[in-house]
Image 1 (cartoon, one colour):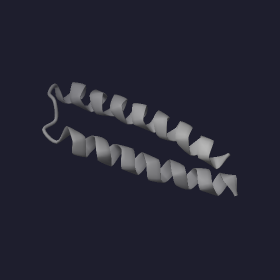
Image 2: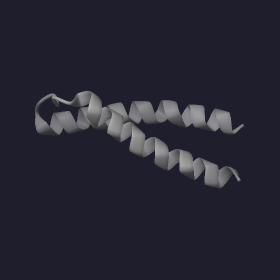
Image 3: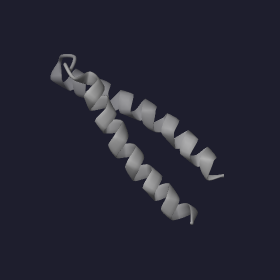
Image 4: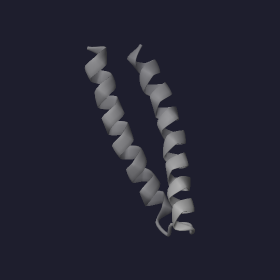
Length: 59
């Protein structure tokens, strides 16, 4: 069952990271040069945090 939780959360985090990145770019008024790196960092931090929480709750 954890596999389902991880999959659903991963998809949601991907979409959330995209929205956050678009929000940041709109606030700055320009497209970021290192857009991929910023997206990766957003996704990485959110994924590590949420996956850790899922593991703690699922035990």
